Length: 310
Image 1 (cartoon, rainbow, N blue to C red):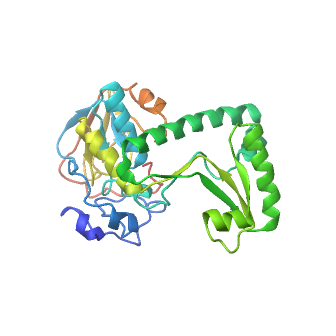
Image 2 (image 1 turned 60 degrees about the vertical axis):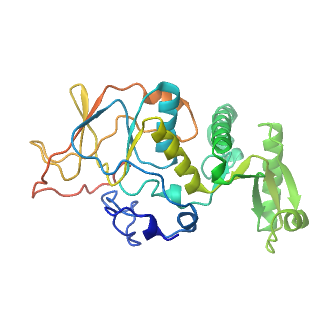
Image 3 (image 1 turned 90 degrees about the vertical axis):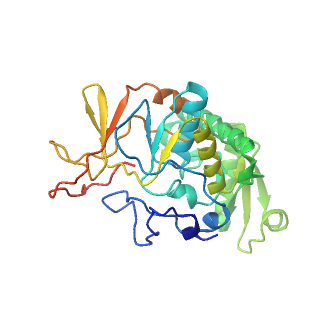
């Protein structure tokens, strides 16, 4: 299935020149990139179309990737809140639909030895506990939605230089003795025979916590479940800025006009991570939000020069 086959009529074709990390706006109504995941995920679940008119919501979530959709799902399931999810482009358009499909019990680029070096052992242990809890939530979700084709088996840190092996040996000892993981070292022969025929490998550290998934099928499953619980997902509805006026956080489309100038769709709650239930609880602490859209854009309107918060 091609990307254009799953693009709604109001969506624009994917633009390979557009980069949300450097452009002034998050885009609006752009379809999927032509990736393997898009080609094999099947027909996307139904969404609620671009947002129109005035809407009030308890919680507005910016972005329909893993973080936004899972936050909406937990808000609905555990707190009874039917959030509105606003997405600039097609649902799950960004990294959620184009990544390596690996769920890891990790955070960022640092190894756990780097955590200790930078923040100390006590903080590293607290960080590990939070990440471990988050990964368990991810495992629970993957088990709930087997259509994402989960493939457990852990994760390999492969050494492609001989001197890297000593670092991985030390990391394995740390993982076992400090953090309590059943990590182990693998020889070059074990890697090539049992895991992957990497001719440049000198060996690897095997971490038992890791699951491969089809990421877009998983995102589609989140979206179907969240919408079945009353969540609204609006693609082609970009967010550029946030402003609170009196008791409301007022939100407007980037084409809107007002006495103080144009305002974009604004968030009441921005989820912390896709893998912690705590973020859903924190998201509940908000007043009601009004989303408003006027009909015309002032001629003086210009996109912001700074990178938008998405």
